[in-house]
Image 1 (cartoon, one colour):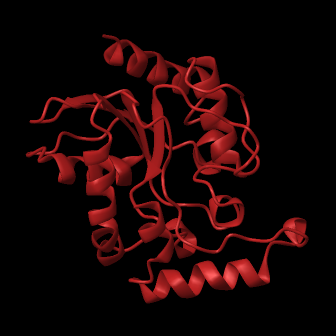
Image 2 (image 1 turned 90 degrees about the horizontal axis):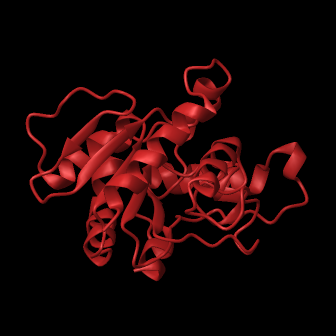
Length: 215
């Protein structure tokens, strides 16, 4: 499945953007070899907790080759996961930096970096078969941490949550298949710089996810 994700070229706009960014680069990363391709999920294949984000960041995962790796959102995420006992280290800077997840899998609803971090609905739908297969392969999963409203809507759509309750930080929704969705504000700079999301707030999400995933 990872190979099929990496080879995907279904969305012309996303293909053009991810490859342009990989060539033009950000000045501070000008010496880096950008990944510039779709990003598959990673972590513990026996995970009880799935962490679902929106899409790779242009100069984060699109550069490093691993979701939530090498950007400020990932810094916040992996620090919280480390404190929760789900990661062996509190930072992730590159795909081969030694980060190991325990009982957790991290992925995104859309597999390519979108312009302005805003995939459109057709791009989301093109990625949906990959997400469906990913969920199906993670057979021990019982909790999905939804980072942001986009991820929450994708999870609700996938698991048949209708009507969809309003998104809110720390909101919990039990899907028809028994999975519990736990909502969190996305650890984007827009949320963390403004104080809309604090580290204790994010810690509370993962503390609750670990509680729910306990045997």
